[in-house]
Image 1 (tube, rainbow, N blue to C red):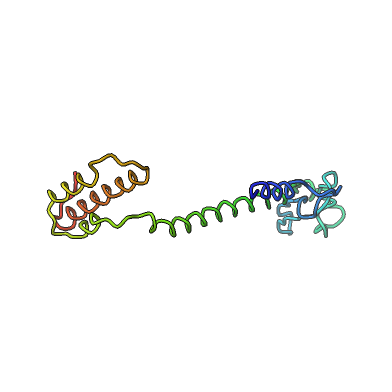
Image 2: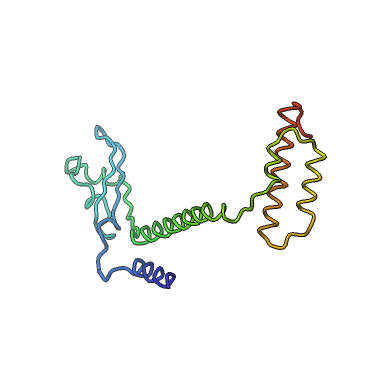
Length: 181
């Protein structure tokens, strides 16, 4: 049902309104005129149709006197630009929806993660720095000996093995001042 509502909202945004002319933000003619004699360069924007996209219709007020207008307009480069603000709005809505969904998923995982995790005596032993490596190996093989039944148990087992490796590396680097090779 939610998916159907989302599709209806996106479709209503994608369908353009029944207007013959476009919004003034969607079309423009942009003329870039370089410096000419003692006049500095300038960029002119005007909302005109594509057939009127030239220097004579866009450059207002004309910075040169009447006899130099043609020479000045030959230097100007005019481009007709068209964009779809509706498409831009739809893309932004989709982007914000994805970011919102990811934030909700993150919040969900933060709430559910403590409920899923089981308290392990193994993690408490990792914090004890006085354990020797033989004890750690025995505990690791005992807790991971039987095959894990669920994906969650396998992931937790891999995570515990990774934590053990990190703890051993920290002890090696910081306590013994040796780099692992």
